[in-house]
Image (spheres, helix red, strand yellow):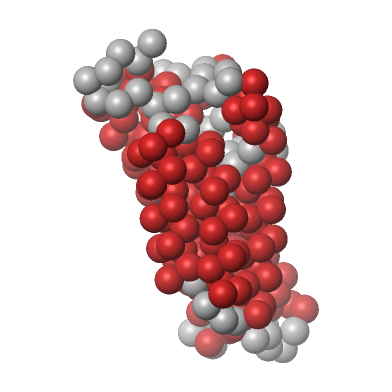
Length: 219
């Protein structure tokens, strides 16, 4: 059982570690670690590139979010392929749940602590969402609805992400999803909230950055 789980962990970490936000910003001549919140996640990429390059930069930020989400979905998909035997396993076997959870957890670790960028990375919202939409479709959609609602009202991406991180595990437990996946949702929710600790401090201090509405001044 150990070897298949190690394979899922290795594949998940490799996929998660791909620093798409950093690479996309580099195409614009920007080192994202020196701008905005100095975070290579899609939110900072969109804010920085959008401010500098307008609509083209914002589309690049959207692409970063999509690719980061795809990493999570792919990590779950590859892990489930191992478990189903579509990709041969050297020895032993592991349950599909254990393989999927391992793949997603290590994709999140890879995204947050990528060896390509000296173990710096994003907060894991997009990568978590990509994997969870495969594992927990309905709770993830409810969390997405909460994210959109909070963002539209407050214009704070960080606050929307924190609220969604609470809604996701709550929905997983209330809807009686697989216990293993509900526990995973709870752990990932706590992880994402902890990764937003600096944002929480700025929210409490009233210094957190907002996304300006279309037509409003970005200042």
